[in-house]
Length: 281
Image (cartoon, rainbow, N blue to C red; front, side):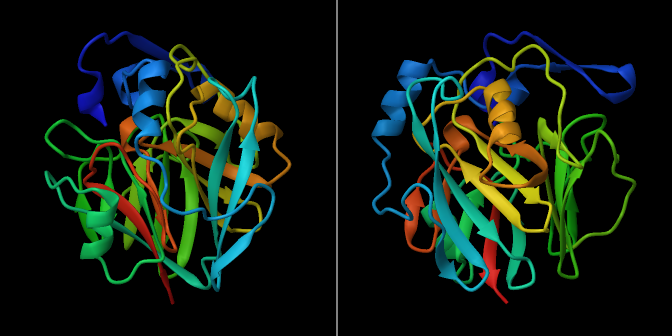
């Protein structure tokens, strides 16, 4: 969420494939300008009111939708160990949709109440102070904004086919989708290859990650009350044996990071204009 980092901007250099260098500002990568102590204190006041799963086991919340907690230990965790909450979705049984209302900011419970009985709601794209999404958003075939170019990734949904795509290796070319959301940075390039990193990857924050396993399942991950750097998140995704990830990128993090799944709420600290929701087919 861009409004979080108006102050203290510094250049972020990411080396892309082919040797190109892309300059961003740190404000569009970190998602929050809180210190680790301040963010931990804020997160502690927004604890879940239920427990979705225990570490190490998948719980079936609905046919095709499972939840799990995976323990993240130091040195990957920035301020003590925490549980990464993971939702695994079978696209053949679960429908994913992107919901977006420019300039309208809602909490996850408010989003849930406006939608048609979703099994899951997770925060989506980065956005400006005015509540406009950064990058391309497609909801029910309606297009908003412009695609990220040369960096980031896209979750694309069309006629039941769902894919996590790298905009570095496969730039958007105007294809038609029913739903789509973009974010950054890439953590895992298609084929399970670790993405490249640069300056700004060592600042801890809450994170929301979307990934696709090699068998096609879609994963949504949030750190809840834990903090992790972009570099550590990339390294953790590369080394964990809990999943076989083909591609992964970051959705908005920091105070925007939140998840509702099957009656369990891990709330974001601030409201958001873009969410991704899951429904039974």
